[in-house]
Length: 378
Image (tube, rainbow, N blue to C red; front, top):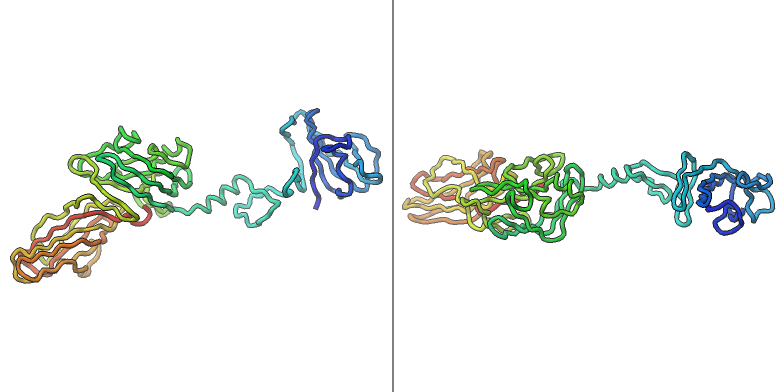
């Protein structure tokens, strides 16, 4: 395979000169590029091993080490495009580019799979981008721990998310972020806190674009009441190009409900009553649990009060969409007996469950939600 050499002057027999290259290392068809910064010219040569023409620089150059045949033959001259640090070539076909050290480069490749596994091929920018994009696990996240700070402030521990927004990229933060809710808080686009409502925390795509970095700060998050929708393409919960990462509930005073999180579990500081202590019979009754739109699993506190009935009663629960008998959770066996417990319950896509008692009577049932599970993609 032909080789390609570089030089900084034509002749002189000194280091850096074309005629200083040893003829014993040259073979027919080798190429050379001489970057003459002094005269602002670049010279392109090919080596002809059988050429014995008398030296006439710059057209014909004989290696000083050669006493017989073998000459560098000028192919082209590029002028006024070169300075001490760079050169511009209008057009050149080079078999191999050899620099001062390292591997020779024989090709600039558009193969975006990098299947060649070569030490002599350099991929183009587009090929590298396509290759690295394919490595990004769509929908990936390392969920942070969210910490309650006060009635309108949370702390977001370190985390990472694949963000399929204006730009496909992994975004992350490696230290605690203090996020203040409301339009006067960390992001002016946030909705002001209101009574008994869900506030969904998103990675703000427009803010990420403006920041121009994958490392997020408080300004790149936004909290609004608009619920996300699931994207099969992005494998996450999104509102447009904003990726949802959590949701927070407010009380009747427009203050964040206290909470604690770890892993996939979000626990409220106090339970939220979703069914007052009231009579329930043998007819399935629908109850909507206080969990965010993206969640399908709730932590439920139940209380079954026999209320003076002599017969025992069993409480059953099931997701709204099911039609079978559901699971038994509470059981009373004597008059004025109570059953109290905490369990995890699946809901339908509208956060609804159904409950029923196995006995008709005066028994009372109360349900309260104590938290939710994040679920897939969030």
